[in-house]
Length: 269
Image 1 (tube, one colour):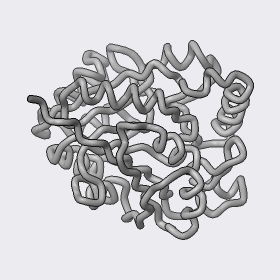
Image 2: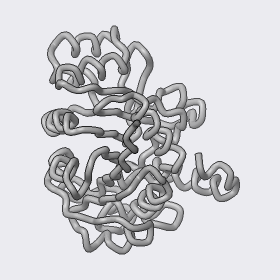
Image 3: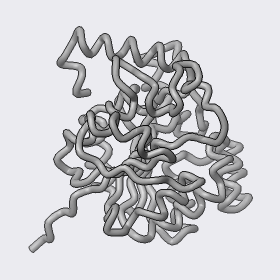
Image 4: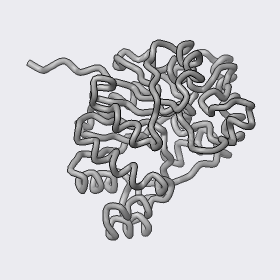
């Protein structure tokens, strides 16, 4: 007899780096998570999307200023809003796997207003099917350019393609703590593949530099070094990799929201 699946906890990272955030300043708000897209704060969209997913039993929003975000979070749905720590990984480590945020944990960000229930369900299903401890969602360059030819992103280039992060991470067991600890150590290197994989030794970094290994294989090798199972989840939806980090992203996000309003059948995808 198989045991029932445990519901997922969704952790939404709604903090920002020290100093003035350019996006927040541009839109005249104090916190980036409150930048409006489609007429509502980004964090509202994310919480609303997660609230529609049956697999998610609890939502936790982590932010430096919980009071400033409380109203926007509440409009999106029922969620606990808690103070974050100085670093992203430290904040997740504090809560993941505790009664506050029991395993399995889905991590996403407040600047991901284009996230849809279908995207999150697809990722959760693939993460569960992998049977691993950690899963990372990415969008391959061809997928992005087929939908948005002019979109500019940071690409991690491997033998199996060029990849951009989709701000979706699955942490399914206590072994995932090893990945979070590495995240704390390597956070500043996250956009340069060879520097990131240098944390797993020079050979893996060299293979990343020379593109003689695919990203899926590199993640698998890196996970084994940490004593866990790590998997790549390629996302078929280009919008999964469009977070709102700059004004041009915001312009595109507004266009996509308008398209969803004009064509409601696309809004769930």
